[in-house]
Length: 113
Length: 110
Image (tube, rainbow over all chains, first blue to last red; front, side, top):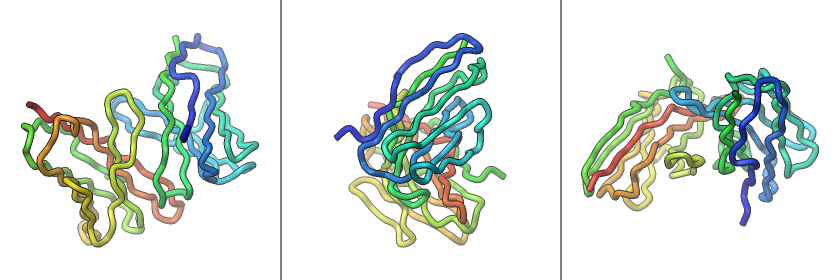
């Protein structure tokens, strides 16, 4: 079972570049989310979606865009990369928000130079 | 006060020891509680949900104390493979988002 597939695993960007982190799940989960994890900060919610066509901001949305055109896919776009966006990014999905197990992708280690 | 607080540790224990972690939460409306495990440079994975009546899964026992607003995780007979960071997760009440603690680091030594 694939679960949550996140690509790429590693990425180095130059300041100002844009890119899209891909996330796909095959569990037919309605709820998907993007987190970033930084030392001493824990997991912080960037954006989330409760279903296709519905997205909302999390705790740290600035500099990121998302869309949810299908149940399966939830890409995260960095509009103009900044060194402050150097982090580990995790995509997660769950059957229901807040009350069900969240399944995570393997993470993307992003470095912005 | 942070919404979810954990002692970061590290907890260094010998194999076979019993170790306990606590996690406090600030939102009295929270309804769902979880312990996740995160290995170094890996994604978090659910260890166990925490029910009002408490629950046990093998060597792991989770308890909820609503009056004092904390959850606990007890690990008995620690194994080397238990070395990881344990994340306390609480749902945020009405909006049902998950709030993550910073994690407690456990190192089990031979």
